[in-house]
Length: 291
Length: 291
Image (cartoon, rainbow over the protein chains, first blue to last red):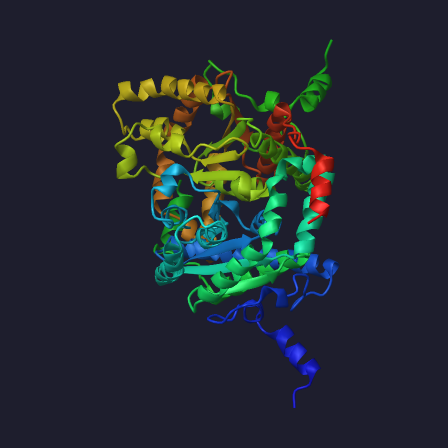
């Protein structure tokens, strides 16, 4: 019979993607998830920082292989979608996790409120334009999910149109998967209290005032509506092709480790190979030595 | 009377931009420049690697200030233009130097042979589309200079049209400067022998075969024509607004230090400031604590 300790141990040995993947098709209660939890991996900050640093060479190597492979026609690429409340660490993830990769193979896009031109198009139009090319790692800081998050909370579109978007997103993401895009969707789960702490820290630090918007305080009054909108999105848009991962985000070091580890597992799953050269090495060497 | 040692010392203390800036308006003889020279700064690899690492926090801090300032309307940004022969280290610079910056504020573009659509437009069209936004650091791996380099060597356009391009480039870069873009143009000066070494290394390493193109060997036969095309471009397009910097590139550690240092000096020259908040800090803190 498996003891509690056995179950804990097997959980620790499981791939992180299995630990953090959201169960699709069933309603999530975000209040049941501890935003400061450490569900797997390093148990403290010092160990976590070291573990993340230790992943860097492997991530860089896999990324280079993926890119190299694309030069021989491999269409595969990875898209990291980052969603979460204000201050949950989307920007910090780009800085600390994506900073581990070769910047020339990263395509980063932060989505703000849509422009007039973007609003004149279907909501997926601007998303499609920002997709990574083969061999690249794409990073979306916010994404098409804003169109079922803020759009739901603020009633920006008629409800019937909003409801159709979940299926449209699933079809869109399936088409990405069919085209060789590994979609890794990360929800940065932050607690209401930790958001207050982070906003206070911005207020207390003049060098961070530029990041502070007094409107962020008002937004907190609709926190429950946002949590519900996330619950619906996680439930309806966790598919076999593009599941959501729930990353506890109250601890920045854990967030960085967990996302680095998730990216590593997905890249290892792709197992990209350096393509062989299609030339005669010895003959090229001889000709080169004559120059 | 200044001794040779005095002159050497003053050269070592001078800003690197003054040491590496190409004299404009006069013909450059590239054979007079040693591609393995160490004209200023750290004298050996270990010192150079440490010196580059030591620049990283200052570069990141200045970049963040520049970005922060842009959120308050500051239009300034920096554009690093990288040119050099194959294997001179354009990609390596992006990986090792640009990797020191926050990737979310970098806009990197590698220019290949123009597409049909790009050829249907004036040669600066695709360049304009890839420019950095305010607060960003833009990086061009190759650039509009290809249109006076390979275009000159391979006679891709009529000579009269080619000759007009130098002035067009100067006017274009002046308009960038007028709009707040600090243009830092770096010529990675590689020796013919070191290029052979690097191509041989690619041949000797199966993991690097994807980077090797047998056509690179033929390109070496027009090496002198390329050097002359660079000499003309450096002479005619070193302006007060956008000078060329000649970086000896045979030593990778020196190239990385020199470009990091050049970027630092330019960013320090901009001296970007965090913008003050336009809100009442105490009142915001009180309201936030009520949530």
